[in-house]
Length: 77
Image (cartoon, rainbow, N blue to C red; front, top):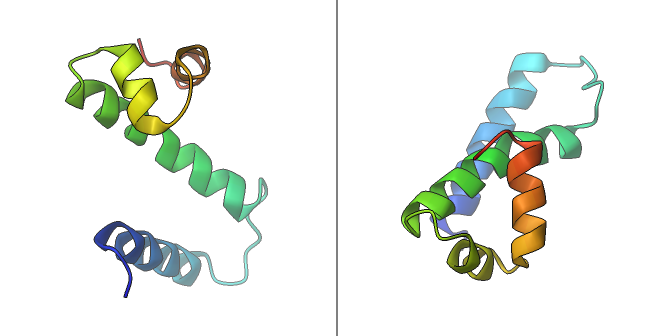
């Protein structure tokens, strides 16, 4: 049985693929999904932890330096 998050991703990817049909995704579907999902994930986890980057990084399973790098890459302060 899929988790609610997994089901949401499956539905969204299925809908995206139906929308684009046979058109190739120039950057690759994996890169596109990661780029689109990572920013909101970082924002939500950081907000959940009241902006505490150390706690957010721990929740994400990454170190704080990696979190800061990802936040900068996504333009999140």
